Length: 185
Image 1 (cartoon, rainbow, N blue to C red):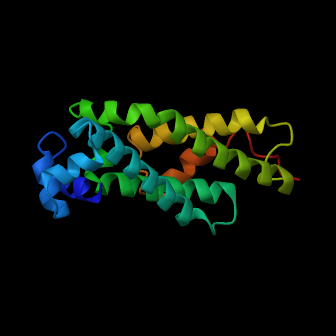
Image 2: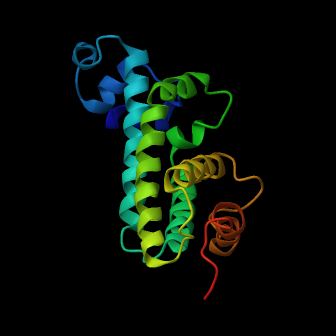
């Protein structure tokens, strides 16, 4: 899959072939088929899912030591947007010209959504216990909302430079957390 990423970076999503992947991996085309018997489509689907998994793992690691929910969301959005703009695969997910890649990711979307939602639910529950989030918040519903908003903002930042921490903090405060934060004592 790493070889597929390299082939995509060199040839584009539409332009790479199994031969390109085999050459990038230093193996024969037959070996690629041994791992991906359904060919290019399977390779694209599994590589896109793998790359998205790596993206979320990098974000989780980047925010692991950030102390509070607001700062975690800001850091995650800033780093996430930077990662997306640097990755030809992730950056192409929002490009309508790359329908093959978009279709490849759709089967894994419920899994991705569930993992992110569960992570955010746990974070919200900790913040409720600390008194930082209103205690009447339905953390399952709020986590689902945050997941959808984060995915939306990462994919289409609506003219906001999410690599700018100040602008991103404003989005987090006004669009993501405004209805969740406990009133100041």
